[in-house]
Length: 124
Image (cartoon, rainbow, N blue to C red):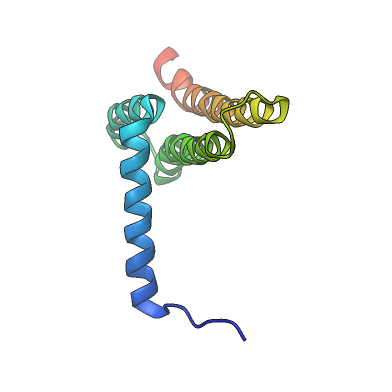
C-alpha cells in the first residue's frame, strides 16, 4: 500500500519551498542562469511597454521564461551527471552537450520571436 503523502495546500506550500530552494541553488551556482535572469529583467519591461497586444506580450514574455525553464533543467541535469561520477564518460558528456543545446535552442527562440514581433515595428 502506498504511503500517504502531503495533500492540498500543505503539499503546495512544501512544493513551493522546494522550488524556491532550486531557484536559490541555480542562482548561486550557475552563472548562465544569473546572466539570463539579468537579461530577462531588462527585456521583460520592454515586452510590456512595446507589445501592441496582450498576445504579443504573452509570446515575448513566454519566450523569456522558456529560457529560464530550460536553464533550470539543464543545470539539474549537469548536477546529476556530476553527482554520478567525476570520471570522463562519453554519455555524461553527451548528456551535458544535449542540455546545453536545449538552452541554445531556447535562446534562438527568443531571438526569432522578438525579431518577428519587433523588426517590422521599428523598420517601417
